[in-house]
Amino acid sequence: RQQFITHFMCAKFLWYFLFKPYSRCILVSQRESQVADVIATRIVPIYEFLDPRFPWPLLDKRSHIKNLEIEHPLSSVGSLIMGLPSGSDKGRGLTGTLVWLDEFGFQDNQDQTIRAVKPMVNGPDSKLIITSTPDPNTRYHKMVKNANANSEIIQHMQGVWETKNAQNECVLSIRYDAHPEKRSEQWIERTKRENDDYTWRVEYNLEWTLPAGKPVFDF
Image (cartoon, rainbow, N blue to C red; front, side, top):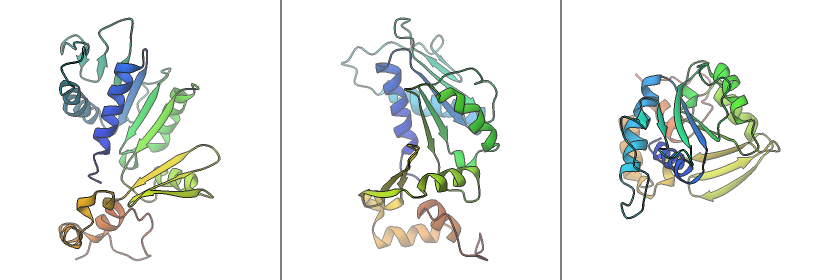
């Protein structure tokens, strides 16, 4: 939570858009308005802040940047960023170079969304990336649990570890203390005071299972 993963994924989309001709990056979020917001307030501003000394293609906001889509202005490149609401049939028949399910643990119709996106990433170079804070007892939880089963844990640094199973499914976990400024006792105590116990333990500390009978909210 609050580790700028959304910004990282937006930058990754832009890298594909600029440097991988004919790539198709597809963002799937809960609602159409959320998809439009990520494009308008994250992806486009990152593009506008790129170093002006380089000859980036000129994107016209009327011709190339639309509500749920960004088209590369050069037909010789032909790359595309597009967004879809979760559970949508609009992606039927599409093939994605990179498909990103944003905050998937909190999306409705998770089974339907997975069925819809799997055909999009059947290509040999296609990738599916799912980002989310934990939400126990969901399809997302089951996917993480299956990927972690019988997998070796690789500790990259404090607060960051990875597992990968035989099916090449990888789970990268990023806990609050991956950020050096969030390791102090003062920060931890302040954050605990500002959030209920469930939020601290699940969304910050990445605990998927709470003890039986543990209240969601403390009164």
